[in-house]
Image 1 (cartoon, rainbow, N blue to C red):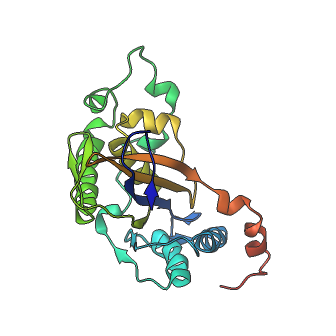
Image 2 (tube, rainbow, N blue to C red):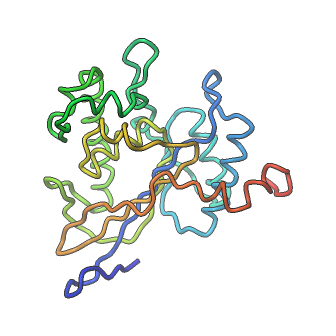
Image 3 (tube, helix red, strand yellow):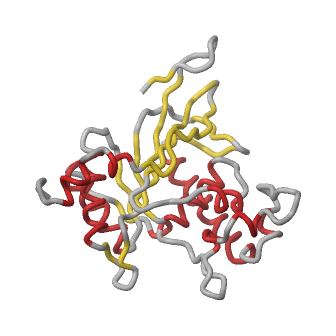
Length: 239
């Protein structure tokens, strides 16, 4: 894909990354509910004609079962990555850090920054190391495709127009968006939600040898609202 950007700039190649949450979960058995299978089938159908270079999947059963429908439709073999399994976001009292309300995060008048967010939240000590490992692992993956993290940007060592998909989890995706979009993690948790089979589409737009991810969609659920989901639910479409 070529994308024409600011007038006077040369057109740049665009790499795309899809961040996809698993379908409606049965957490007890680490699988999908019937609704989750329906969502996963609808998602796979929506990706039928989307060129995909690689499918990466969390080792958790609910993500594996979601990805298998897309893998079948695309006739691709998914690659399991241990590091895109769900993060440990439980910090006591039955609370998950990405479910803390914005009302709590925004009690103070001054906003957290990318550099200091972990100092101002009760889960900072738990999440900061996980955030750093996740960021490092993702950047290592992207480096395999020719994009090397350099400061707040990615240096383009090798242009490409590939699209890869990661089937993973809500907490992981939200935390990763903090790194990729340079947003303080508590603000991501406060202002974004992530539903089953939600799709975030990020484009690495190349300009003057560097690229910065731009979100074209976040938590896109159009595959569930375009009429096809009712056909799946009513059993009128095959596996």
